[in-house]
Image 1: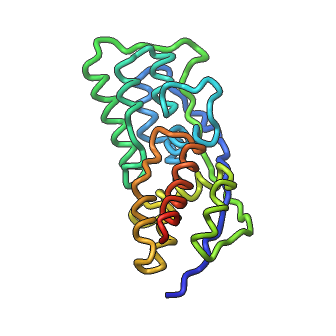
Image 2: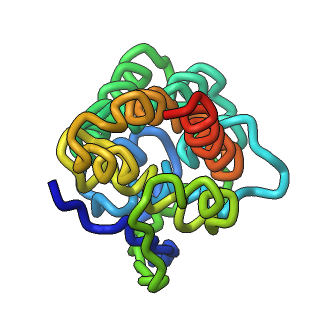
Image 3: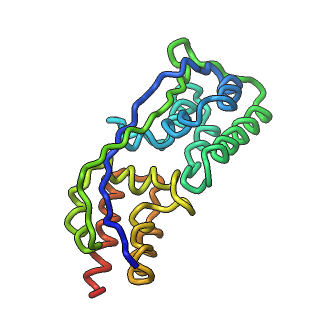
Length: 219
């Protein structure tokens, strides 16, 4: 079977203000129902490409806001453990968040408001993809390439790929599948990497380890 080379792409997320904001949990729920899907993408995955210097406890912007400004530890914890990568699409993720918020609203005796200036501002993302012009025909060549890949490339090929590939897979596994069954062991190792609750640098190290470990065993 003829397989095309693995083309390395890079990417960046452009932040676009929507003008939508929420001052309490009820407004937050109402805005969530209609905001652009790119908002959920940005507030869940955007932090990977734009890490916070204070290394927040929570992995998505919704949980950070609920904790810091609503001072609601219960809803912030519930939002923080959402793994966006397990959902087949953005709308399923949206429905999960809304369900969690509505349950919290139902059990709350009062709705806390944040101070002016601490509202949640919904930001929409637009991904910009760059063709690096670099391509590899042999999977072994990625042994040296992966450690040098930009974090934008890791994001594009391992995180963003799950939004655009059948079965929500990473680009490496999809490409390796084109070699019939030759690299099934490596594919399994890559598919077992959990990209949740990690940094892109750590993710790059895990991908690199999977490749090194596979070929070190003489495959």
